[in-house]
Length: 258
Image (cartoon, rainbow, N blue to C red; front, top):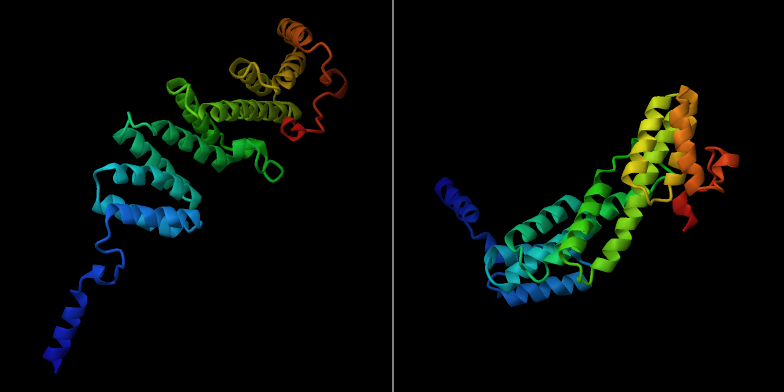
């Protein structure tokens, strides 16, 4: 009886795991169709499984390439941004000349953009000085790569809009930190962060406030020559700036004006 029991256990452990896989024997086309159907229904977990099986069983050919690209999108929709970025990078590395490689760059930008929501998705709940702008900068780099390499891409126009938004957000972050230092009397640090904003994002809306902080910080430090230089630039570019009357107490951030 013990021998029979052992044989039964061994037979159960050695059974083929694909026996219960309903997709066993499916063609690449059928797996891809099932993945597309699942995507259409918003069943991202099912779509992921179908695409992963497709790539594993049929690693070559057009279906495999399409599966690699769509996996990046499906991972993103499944709230797996790390896997989405890895899949997009892998596609770019394996197929640098693929007609859809511009989409891979665009998708990388979208993943990082939405991961951070352009820095301002939850500003009401988190101090900007505590935020890490890494995702925003990486999103900007991906969009920039797309626009530079594929200026005629159908994703280029939207990428440019998102780049402009990110520039404004990143500039606003620098100015926010500069304002934070001003309020705490760290005038050198405030001047340095305001200067970074002015030099890095000269066209952003937040530069008006950055220039005002520069003037105020240099004045507090007794650096009269630098203060006067900054004030000349301020008055030339923003002659009617509200900061002359309101100071640094802003009531409405730039992103809420939209």
